[in-house]
Length: 113
Length: 115
Image (cartoon, rainbow over all chains, first blue to last red; front, side):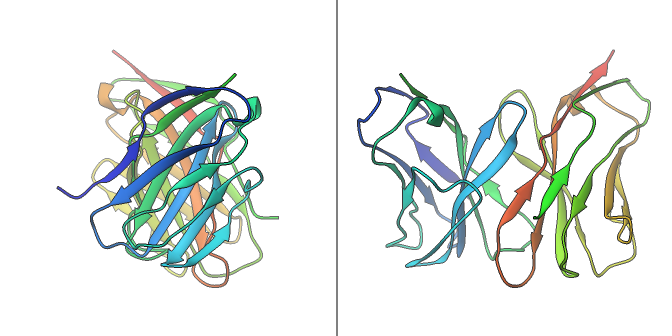
């Protein structure tokens, strides 16, 4: 089954404790992306990747890191999480940047206390 | 700056009736794609419809159609014969087809279909 998986689905952590949210797709997609969703703000793109070893900043990259060492994986790293990073995070992938559809993961609800 | 504006935070419609969700955007580029995504209570993001900016013909997918006005930078979504399953948050978005490939989303419109 074609899908984008994210782990964990829910995470509660404390300020400053490094964490990684994993994202994996099994569709051989080139384009992958991370978003955060906040009430009243919609979805905002954090980082995106055009292919292996090619990443670029979205609109809200501060406080986040990403890497794309393999085509299928695109982890999101928060080196020192802060409460303002409490949000719902989505990973998405598509065959190319403007192909017909982005496939979204199920979301990760992160709470930083 | 590239922006997407959805001016209706919430809307409601009676089952079987028609509703239109508005979206305006701002870009200096001429080549881009526009999208409407649906997010039901399950939180899953689902593509509803896509429009290529170079196409004058409005896209249609079953009960969903768009009114694309490129000069006005407007991209509204019309839902005909509304169904209870259409209850969701709807997001308008665009991406340029050259240069940077950032997706820009609007803030969303929460639609409730009433029985």
